[in-house]
Length: 112
Length: 276
Image 1 (spheres, chains in turn brown, yellow):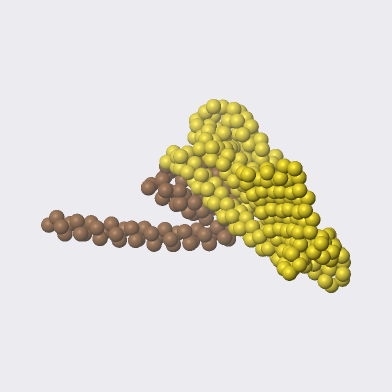
Image 2 (spheres, rainbow over the protein chains, first blue to last red; image 1 turned 120 degrees about the vertical axis):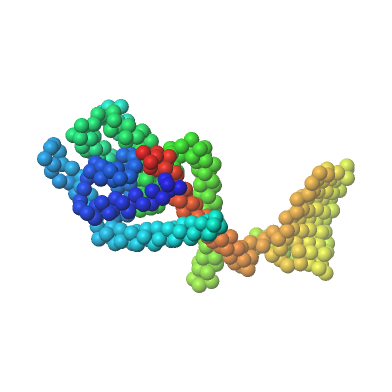
């Protein structure tokens, strides 16, 4: 259950991280893994998928240390997608919380 | 696993995708190793985090072939896609064999239908062209009729009976009232009959021996214009229907295959451990 949920939400999290500013793969993994458990191996397949959807594009930029780095940036379509996903996510969380609250209320009512 | 080993395995497993794309993927992973090392991690730690390179490559290959198939639907791309999905796991590999056989059957059916349709078109086209321009010249039941009419002109005396010593018999008969004419060859082992029906165009061939009998009705049917037209239309309908059926099956198969490939990739993504 948690895995399934996370898979869908991971796209949104990466888009959200990119909305805060362009970033590269290692930094993205670091940013996300600060608060959620993610496998490093998922990052590149995920970024390729987001690229295929045309939600992100890439550009190369010289780094201070050594060769240039690939930066990911949100496209206009990606930004729109992020808004839609956040909206859906909010609705979903509200619905689930409402059900949980209702069930908890019923249980308490039966108990007393 | 060292960085070098990781990259080598990745490159080897990606040998069948275009050079440019492969270099891009390899560069991505090199960059990741650089960043990890700069953060003070060991090569083997980073490699472990990234997972099995050959499994990773299989997944990237499958994705690559799905994209290629979506952008251009050719037989080469289709078989590459089936191969890539087969590479994702042993069960997929087993499933790919009957699936490839099914694809082959579908191809044959499509070719056969095309052939039948073309046959129908040629027959109808020839008829139409004959009607409009008088070309090609069609001989309606020419050969058959010459024989039969020569026979029917010679009157009742044209009945011929030849009897053999052991009961063999050859008969040429004509019934003036019904217009029927026939040739019978009979022996104790069996018989051959060739009959002309009431209408000139339709004949009948019967071959019989003690075990079995073959009856062919409607000989010369094709040699009449109407017969040709009906034959042509039937062929066109059969071929067209077959092609249409094949087309729908192919569409269905494409969609099914793509969803199956995507599903397998999703399963792999989960198996690889989103939870780290």
